[in-house]
Length: 346
Length: 220
Image (cartoon, rainbow over all chains, first blue to last red; front, side):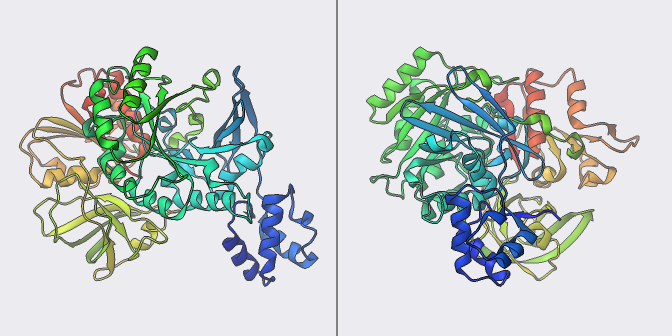
């Protein structure tokens, strides 16, 4: 029987494990120290644990770290790492260095269920949830880990469709017993699954990014099927019940599609929709994917759109596209080649 | 949408195919065919969020019908499958806008994705529809007896792993690729797994169906 990974467990989960093994409760804190503050590859290296404790742990558990198995480097310095998962699948993480910042874009699922019209990850369907350990492994096993300043949950998958594992990973990343990162250095991006969004807002202090892409109900449904069940107006209504006047930030992602969502009517409706909510808008150039009916807006249109939103009081920037030559840019991550034809039900 | 959970008691739970179940409970709310409800077996959302299921019964029926299959790694369906008449479950109010129009349209479904179309059928069809249903085996076409006899419905079943004179032999994606005259002015309603929906959507777009006419409901 395969051993269970310890890496990624919260302190509460580690405490349960040591108590089940009949070990002292403080062993959980020692485990967390070894897992999250030191670099070890085996339980045997946990030298401040008794020999008995190490033996008991080793019978059922392993550390559970996985090094990347491939890396592609863009001419702009962006790197795309391929990591294996426990169940033989693969995920991608994008490392994006930029002057004083170094951001890692991590995946939260293998594939995605959301089926957004413009996203490459959605085209591979859904192949599995990542554990908390598999999410944090993308950070811990990153060769450039020491340079990282920011983490964004914007890789493969919809984080709020894997809420428990994502919340556990955030706890480990931001807790004193874990990596001790400021939640202000972490942004979780979602299309707005309402029940999970509420949990995230109540239980985490990390930043939030919402994929908006259209303020109009019918139009957003055609781009993002999720709009049928969780309309963006309901998402914004929920967000308006929270206080963003402090350091916590909410931003909106808006991919610009020519002739679809880049008109003055969209500026007007976005302004109306976001009225009263302190937020930022990130405009994103569309990176064309195979078989898409959509085209990206011209740069001049994006600039005008940005200026119009800023004039309306919505702080708006244009996100620089990074890693396009290695398909590491927004919406381009995919490991579709591994989809098992035999498991299709259609 | 209202995520408040409230208790209802099952009136039946029937396994209609291997690992595929139909539960019913008394209807005491209004809904529009095609809408979903959240279902849980816990009275709170502390540990698990309710899962969304399309209602499979008609708008005026006394009983609400839900179709589900067991997800081995799921927290809900393995337990729900063991529930019996009289057992309590928790539901949210109906919501969602994957709803029918009074125009000719194509419905495309696989697996339990047939549920909203059964609801639409049982709520009354006033214009012709074409239903293309995909399944692996001959018993994968849930509710086929109801669809077969409806005179407003052109019904095509695509079976990928068994042959039968009444069925198209092959995946529904292959069937769609073979079609040379899909009407581009009709709406195409897609419901099923993410893999099915994105693959079918790509095929329809390649056949010059405007993406504006493709309406997708994805199970997650």
